[in-house]
Figure 1 (tube, rainbow, N blue to C red):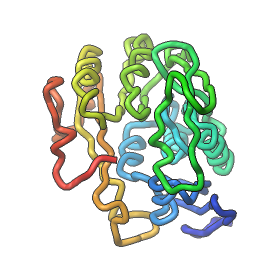
Figure 2 (figure 1 turned 90 degrees about the horizontal axis):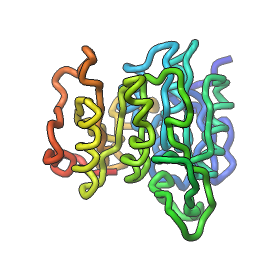
Figure 3 (figure 1 turned 120 degrees about the vertical axis):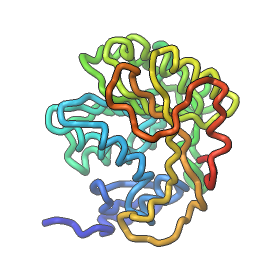
Figure 4 (figure 1 turned 60 degrees about the vertical axis):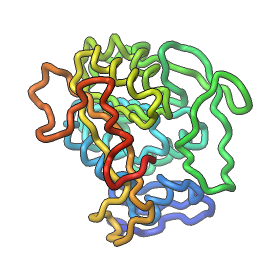
Length: 281
């Protein structure tokens, strides 16, 4: 029997399972963005999820780098079914455990969830601990070379040996350049579309230059977290215009370039920090 939208399937504070837009989702109530959005809207950054599902087709292979609890992994896995696969990579143990739970809750057999970070080469890093008692953005925790926290493996995407790769989403709190460097062979061989966070003004010029050198065309994508057509029909923007700052990176040879999108032509393009009517996540 179908579960009605919004049904609370399990309420065990500080975690809750609710029937959301893309399926049953387990989330933490103190997670100020992903968890709160799922709780209030029944979705998280749905305008991004819609873009990913527009790109993906059955049989494709996608990689979700910085998968968090799987709010994008779940719809991506549905979009590539049957015959496709999603490799979801998340270094924070709590978030990885919830990612695995959400994959299992939705019966998704085409997801490979790795408890690891991604970077330029195989190695180790430290995932700082998350204080679960304090409301905060659980996803805004960058890996460190040393210090307090839990040691975690770093994998290079090239080392995964993917036979095919059509789409890679990268959201790793300023470490995007290292992930791309570690995926250079895969990008050259498979020519996937990349979706890359570009939220750090000091790192943006080098990141843009790196991506342009891979013969990709770059397009601005700044979706607000609030979707007026959200699953629970909640009318108010609880995030006060917060948006995510990203680039859609399409191989230059592809005929599927997004019509009417703002194209980024050089590292001097400072579009991210002058976007109208939005605040960065």
